[in-house]
Each structure stands twice: as C-alpha cells, then as structure tokens.
Image (cartoon, rainbow, N blue to C red; front, top):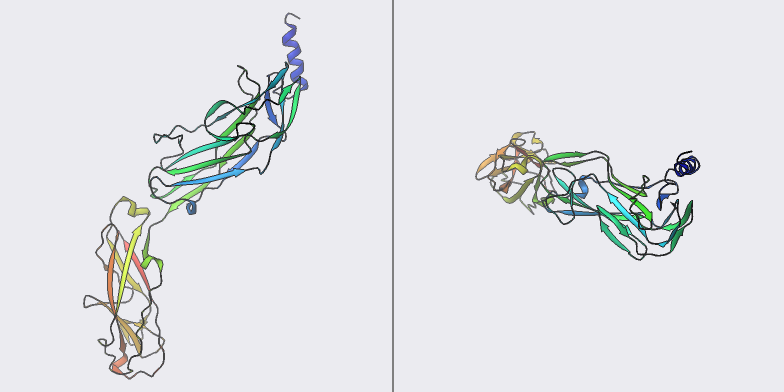
Length: 333
C-alpha cells in the first residue's frame, strides 16, 4: 500500500455515487430536471429583429444531494451553465441557433440572488449561506436554481420557405456547494431542449386584408339586365409575402375562381338559372378561372373590378333575392 489515500478514495467510489470524491458536487434526486421548448411557425413573425419569449418552470423547488469528501462549512451554492451554441454577432447575450435564428437563454438562480442569469456563466453564487456538508453528503430539499428560466428567440434573417430545427439541447446547469477550484461535477441539475420543428413560411397572398368582399346590388329591375346596367365597383387590394416573395418582387397574376353561368361562359353563375354576374377590368372581360397580370409594387397592389348583372338572352328575371360567390386566387413566378 504505497498510496493509502488513493486506495481509500477508490473504496469510497465503490460505495457512493460517482460525485463522492469531489467536494460539493450537486446531484439532483431522480436525475436532472428536463424542460422542452416547442418552437413552431405560429410563434414566429418572419421579420428581422422580431423576438419571442418562452418561459419554462417546474412550478416549485426540487431536492438533491451535495456530496463532499471533506467537510464544507456553511457556504453558498455556485452554479455554471454551458451551451454548445456560438455567440451571435448581434451581441446582447444572444447565441446563434442557426442561419435564421438567435436565442438568449436565462436561468433562474435562487437563494438570495433571485435573478435570471444569461447563459453561459460560471461560478455564479446564490449568495445564500445556509448549508454545510459533512461527508459523505448533505441533503437539500429546496433547490430553486434551475427550476425555471427564459429563452428568447430573435429572427436574424428572414426565413425563405422553411427551415428545420432538430431536437437539440441548448442549456445544462451544474451546481456545487462551496467555493472550490475543483470545478463542477459530471451530473447536470437541469437541461433545456428545443423540440424538433419546421418553421414554414409559405408563399401567400392576402386579399382585402383577409376580409370577405361583399357586393350589394340593392333593388334592381328584372328587365334590361344586359351587362351594362346597375354596375357595382369591386376594389380588390392584395399583398403577397413569405416564401419566394422574400427574394424580391415577382410577376403576379390574379383570377376570379368560380362556376360559369350555364348560358354564358364569360359570366359567373348565380342561384337563378337565367341570371349571371359579369366582371370587367378597365372595360375588358374578366372570365371565370382565367389569370390576368396585375400591376404591383412590393408584391402588392390593386385590381379594380366592375360587376354587372347579366340575363340570359335579355330575359326578364323573376323578383327575389339572388346571390353568387367566387374566390380570388393568385399565381406568381
């Protein structure tokens, strides 16, 4: 027995958890507390500089043991939090998650500190002198550090079409009772993960700010419905964004999708068999389901239509309400 100290420590390792030969290392009961953040497209506005805050919490404290091989007097707990993410060029405590997103992670440090500390950090004291350790360990039933935190995402670059985020760990928290040069043990107290997600930003064109366009003809005569009487203006405003539009302006075409009247392919069907609705733009017919180029600036603009009732062969239409419906659709390249 040339080195009895080593032999004693090895025997202790055979009887105690792996952290036993390190002074103050904290191991939570039942393993590290794990948190999961679900980031999806509904949470993200595709605009550079947009931020979204997510919080996580256990809703209370948890228990653990601080192991020691020599006595530790009453001391604060010290904490460190690691991350594999590089620092973002944006600064302000942000890390770079990928080409499109930054994130800032903050972990709650309890005790008398009672504040969120931005990751990464090392040797953060909770400033709470309550616990001491007599070998082999001290039981602590009120760990609050790592029991909650905040993650703020920031759009660093507009997402085009979509980006996939795989399951990944972004934070680990380690603790130690007492100040020591020995560092921190191998067992994390808390871990935070981002769940797999696809941030999908589709091409989309919004017409009339997404509101229904209603056209009221009011009371009209049942005769002389020849395609020129009782005109109603339909201002169609549109704005396209997302996906392919993020690269710049595209050539946009619009169509009015609907069912043609049985007596005239250039008019839209109504609930009266001999009555249709005819649409024009600048005096030219707008035929059902045909796409027409529209002027736009910044992938948005107006397409002003004119709607008129049209009778089959100039027939007189019986009195009563009539209605028709159609959908404005877009194509682009």
